[in-house]
Image 1 (cartoon, rainbow, N blue to C red):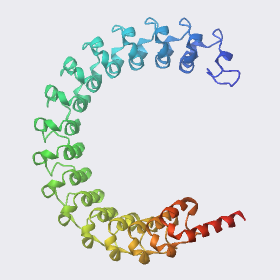
Image 2: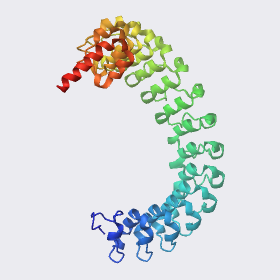
Image 3: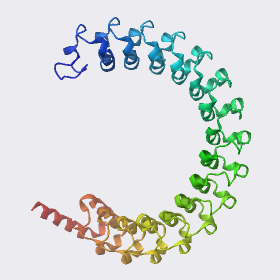
Length: 416
C-alpha cells in the first residue's frame, strides 16, 4: 500500500495517512509491514490476517520488541524460519523453544551459534544435524564433553574447526585416522603446543600449509624441516621471516623464490647477506628493500643500472643518506618523492636542489627540514603558502620579514 503523500510503500513517516487494515494487501505485503512499521506494531497487528507462512521471518527479525504480543507457536512457520528464531529471538528462548517443532535438519547450526547459553535445554544428539557439527565446535566448546561424539562428528568437512576452536580439548578429540589432513595447516596454526603428537610429514598438507608450519612451529624446525616437501614457490618468504635463525640450515639459492620474495631476504636475513646475495638472481624490483634493510652493505649491492629508481628513490634518500655521493643521479631519481631529499638529505642540499624538478606539492618539507637554505629555495609563486603558511611560522620565523611580505603581496594582487 502506497502513501498518498510521498508515494512510498509502507511509509513510516505518514503511517496514519495510508493505513487501512481492510484495504491492505496482507497476503503480499505482511513482510513489508513487519519490516518497516515495527514502531506502529500495536496499530496494525492482526494475527488472523497476517501472512505467517511468508512473513514469520520479518516478525522475528524486526518486531523482536513485541515478541510476547505476536508469538504463536501454532501459526509461526517453523519449517522455514526456525533458524531465525534462534538467531534473533534467543532472549526469549524459554518461551518459543519446542524440540518437536524446531527444524533440526536445516537449523541445528543456529541453535549452536546463537543459543549456546541454553545448550543444556536444547541439546539432543539424536536430533542435532551433525553435518553442521562445526557450529558445536565453534560456539559450544565450553560444553565439549557433553556433545563430543567422534563417530558422529563431521570430520571430513569440519576437522579444521576442531583444531581452531577446541584446541584445549585436543587430547580428547585427536584421531589421526579420522582427521581430514587437507585441513592440517590449522593444526600448525592453532595446535602448535601439541606438535609432537599430531605431526606426520607424510600426511601434512605441505602445499597449503608450509606457511603455517614455518610461522607457528619454528621451535620444532629441526623436526619438520624437509626441503623436498616444503612449498618454496609460495612460502619462501615465510622461511626468511620466521625461520631466519635457522637460515644456514634451510638456505638453498636454487629453490628459493627469488622472483616473488627477494624482498624477504633483505628484510629478515640481512645478517646473512654475504651468504645469500646474488645480483643476478635478486629481483631488482624489490631493491627498495636493499636500501631499507641492507644499507650497511651498500657498496656490495649497489648498481645504479639495476636499482629500481621509480619505486626505491625514497628508500635511498631515507636509509642511505651517508652514501649520497655514491648513488645520487638527478636524471634517475624519482622527483615525485623529492620530499625525502629535503627530509633526509638536507646536508647535501646544494648537490640535489633543483627548483624545476622539486615536487612543490610537498613544499612544506623544505620549510621544516631545509630552513637554513631558505633564501636559496624560497619562491612565493611555487611554495604552497595557502596550505602550509603555518609551517613557515613554526620553522622559519627568522625569515618572516621575507615570506610574510611576499605572501601579503600575492594576496593583494589576487584581490586586484
